[in-house]
Length: 141
Image 1 (cartoon, rainbow, N blue to C red):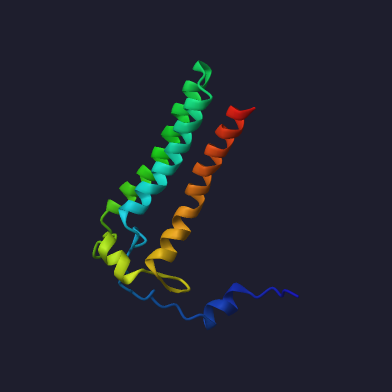
Image 2: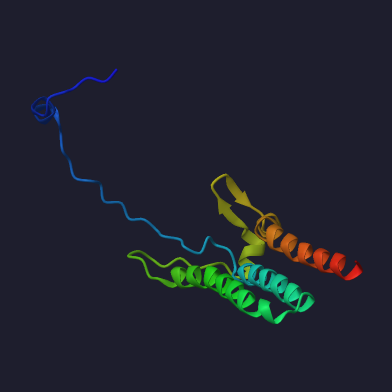
């Protein structure tokens, strides 16, 4: 149960101290190479291109442009965010050679490059394959 404690009692027992000042290294790139982000964007835009060509309709031009704009903005804004300079040393994304040799550190431990790339690209590749499957099914019916 809760109990009301008088503010005066709290004030005479409270000890107020300054917050500790700890230098933090801000990593906004997640250590992933730019090629993985590029492949992700390519898969999503490829899905849009495949479906736009297969179901070509003048009425779909505006929605497809809006979807492409959302995808580009969804990856463009974080790209700008990684370039912002925090108060501490700027962290850089790994190039492909460093990524292949070191992998990336995650909350649960270090991941090899193959495993990290698989985790990052599994959904975009499945979306692209799903688009191909839908177009193939529509073409055969």
